[in-house]
Image (cartoon, rainbow, N blue to C red):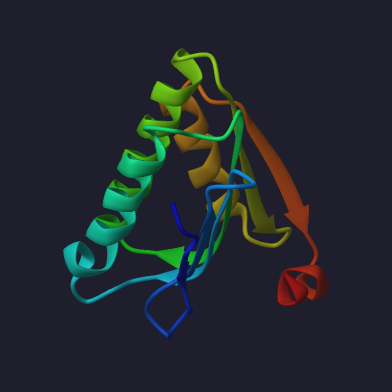
Amino acid sequence: MEVLKRESSVQTPMINFDPISGVMEVKGRAIPDDADNFWMPILSWFESYMLSPNEQTVFKINLEYFNISSSKRILFLLYKLNELSEKGFDVHVDWEYRSEDEDMYEVGQDYAYMVKVPFHFVELTESEFALV
């Protein structure tokens, strides 16, 4: 299985899903005009990953903004992490957010409440956020 990489754009996040390391990264803005067109290949890739996952999967989310259609796809991925966890795999989410962005922190808390996967909340200063 190959690494899934997508460069970020004004409307879509950077995607870097590495099946060897088990690190899955989503970073940037997720406001695609056509959410299915953007997210379906990513969701399909993740379904394939679940057939032979790494012993540990770390899902790193660092979003400055996302729309409701992307929110649904992110939640779908988090539910898939639940499935991996229930099969005995080591899974957690690193939810990175700017220290000034209370809304993004609260959204992460909402997601953490909806799934059984452990969340690690990583508060970044504005300068750290720019470097990530």
